[in-house]
Image (spheres, rainbow, N blue to C red):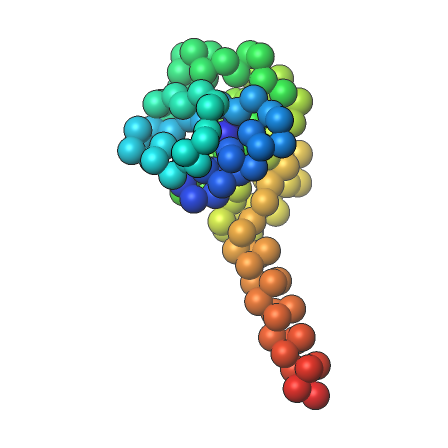
Length: 135
């Protein structure tokens, strides 16, 4: 299950489905599903990923992975904790833009990804590579 159907969520949904996974995408805005690949055959559920009733209706009790990639760190953190602690989902990952908050929640056992930190690292490596090549 992927919570958030922005650019990253939609791309990830397509990649996972292409790899043979059954994918459910949950988003509060139905218009967001337009970002999914035309070939997407998974479930599209309109709802909030911190709403326990909506998660149950979306099938959270049968999933083996939950990925939270909305624009909001707080919602991603809350939904990931609900998936992990209430529904005992084995694999849970959430995107957290703020690197300081990522460190805190990672220390508390939440699997996190910070695109801010990853992007900065990639940019640093690219500029260092440019310097070496020009060197």
